[in-house]
Image (cartoon, rainbow, N blue to C red; front, side, top):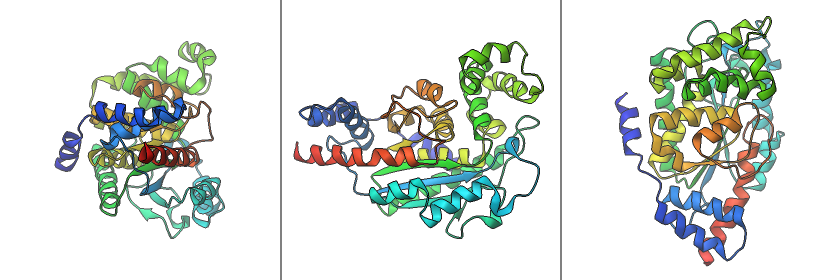
Length: 337
C-alpha cells in the first residue's frame, strides 16, 4: 500500500500552460484533431513540443469468473487464441504496431488457460478472478498486489525510455465487469445498465424484466451499493486482474509524465479505477475511439473526447495503436513549429 500511496501522491496535474503551448505549435496546421491531441500530449508530458520516439503497446490478458464457460478449453480458449495471434504477428494489432514501429508487450495477468498462453507473455497479477455476480471478484490484497505489479511494470518501461504508452486488454467477462465498475463509480445502477444494454433496454432491465439474467441485475444493484466504499474495494469487488494491472500501469506512467492511450471498455474501466485513486491521472489519458459497450459512458465520466468517433472492436489495442501515427505527426509538426 505504501507503494500505491507514494505513486498516487506523486502525480501532479497535467500542465495547462504546456498544453496550450503545444496546441499553438499545431495551430498553423489547421487540423483540430491534431491540435487537441497535441494539447493532451503536451499537458501530460509537460512540454510544448510533445515527444513520441519511445513508445510501447502493452496488452494485458485476464479472464473474469463471470464469463467462465465452465469447461476447460485449453488452446481453444478465446483469450489464448487472441494472445497467440498477437504473439505470432497475425493479429490486426501486430500489423498496425509494425507499421507504427511500436513494440508490443503481452502480459498475462489472469488468463484461465495459463499453460496455453504464448511463451513470450510476461506473467503478472494474481490469476483469473471469481464470479462477481456471486462474490467479490478478488480480495483487496490481490487487487493491491496487481496494482503494484502494474506500477512496477510502468517504472521498468520508463527506465528504458518511454514517451508514450498505448494499452489494450483481452479476456472474457470484461464487459460485465466494466458495467459494474461504472455503476460503482457513478453510484448508479441505472448508468451501468444503460451502458451495458443500451438506453432502450435499460428501463426494462431496471424494471426487473431481465428474465433469467438475475445475476446481471444483482451486479448493477451491488454496483450502486458499493458506491460509498473506496476505489480499491470497488476494484476488488468488480474488477479483473487485468483491470488492476492496467490501472497500476496507468498510474505509474502518469507519475513519470507519460500519457496513456486507451482502447475500449476494459482499458477504460482501468482508467476509471486509476482516476478514482489519483484524480490528476485524467490529464494523462488519451481516448483512441468511442469503443463498445460501456466505453462511451466511461469516457464521459473521465471527461475525454475520443480521437476517432467510432467504435473499433473490443479493445485489444488496435484502436490505441492507430493513434500512434497521429502522435508522430504532432511531434514532427511541433518540432518544426
